[in-house]
Amino acid sequence: MTVQDDMTESPEQAARLNRLLDAAPTATVPPALERRILADFDRLAARPTFAKLIRRIADAVWPDAPLWQPAAAFGAALLAGLSVAVFAPFDIPQQDDASASVFALDSSPDVDAGQDI
Amino acid sequence: MVNDPDAELVARVGQGDRAAAQVLMARHIGKMLALARRMLSDPAEADDAVQDAFVQLWTHAARWEPGRAKFATWLYRVTLNKCYDRLRRRPTARLEEAADVADATPGPDAALQNAALSVQIEAALAALPERQRAAIQLCHYQECGNIEAAEILGISVEALESLLARGRRTLRTRLEHLKDE
View (tube, rainbow over the protein chains, first blue to last red):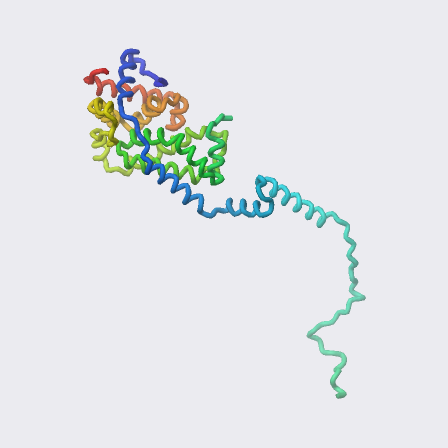
């Protein structure tokens, strides 16, 4: 018994009260209540959630693996891609303005190709 | 870090494991129902309160963080809060009537012999203030330690001891006339 007795409660009084309390009826669990509770579980488990969506995608990518494995693989791939984008020494030749053919679409043409026709 | 015998089951429930949900329910429903019936003195309403508590469990199981608190403590606290919610919604008259409500569940022959005694004890318990009733239910019937019961009630151990002492003193007075077995 874990009841903290009152200072004014003698051991005999405490024992008597505990015996009386033990005589109170105990609760029996109705099977219908258990069925209702499990039906709630089924209903909530069938409800789509963001976490379940992530889990489904992870299962499609890496079946039966714990979630951290596809997440770690995705993170590593992302990091590798970013590293290549930032640090890789790509040499793309730049065109200078002199070699580029620059013209304005709204200026009048120097030559009217159709005037002699 | 709390060593929690339910932690693994809760994690599985969070992943939608029905078998784990069934085991977890079987492990706790008896005590939850006893607590709710004692608090509400109405078997049908107690059933609803316990069902509500389980809905909260099913909803939050995936977000349960093991090690922060003992699962059973959290679950009984949820049950108690569901009971408090229902008690708050009751008209005041029903709280007074609660003292006269007997357990509606039919018992076996042995229980019938003590029916009169049981009814009086139930009535005396039902007439206690709700927090004293909860303290006695947790410490006497569910055999929670004082620290765990205080956590469930959200009070200090000293406050729990005071509730228990006052509740037991009131019960002793009200049950004085009963013959001991």
